[in-house]
Amino acid sequence: MITIISGTNRPGSKTRQIAAHYQGILNEKGIAHQLLSLEMLDAVIRNDTVRELEDVFLKPADKFIFIIPEYNGSFPGVLKLLFDITDIKSAWHYKKALLTGIADGRAGNLRGLDHLTNVLNYLKVNVYFNKLPISRINQETDEQGNWLNTVTPVVIADQVEGFLDF
Figure (cartoon, rainbow, N blue to C red):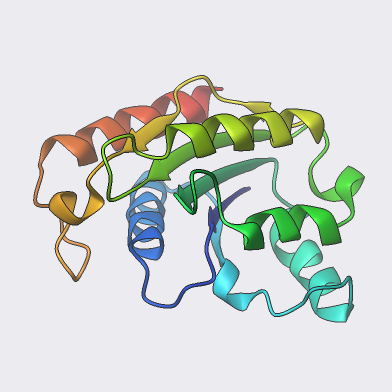
């Protein structure tokens, strides 16, 4: 099972649109998956809502796809909060992750990808080598999430194909 994590709690984000694109690829391939949007995370402490989120989205997954926007040169605090309030061993240890960064700037959240890689490695998550930084996201997609650049969806499909063999 693969869990796609849309790594922000901002409603209507480009992050959620890109996560939906990854979801479409997995649907086409018939791969079991689910989408966790951090818009659903409404907790700052470990509680029953967090335990349910773990049981549904994290514990059953053996792989994760993280779509992470750039926030202040890194990844969003709500994603760090997810790591901090979940049971690390059952949710994260010895699993695999694919990372895609998005930013309106020109670096595609490279710093955030590196930072998240370090955090995931600390949590004993094996990170796939092909991390994809998507720069100038507002020039890549329109407001509805349709691709304006035809190359990026091909690159994403290749990234996913490699990750499935990882």
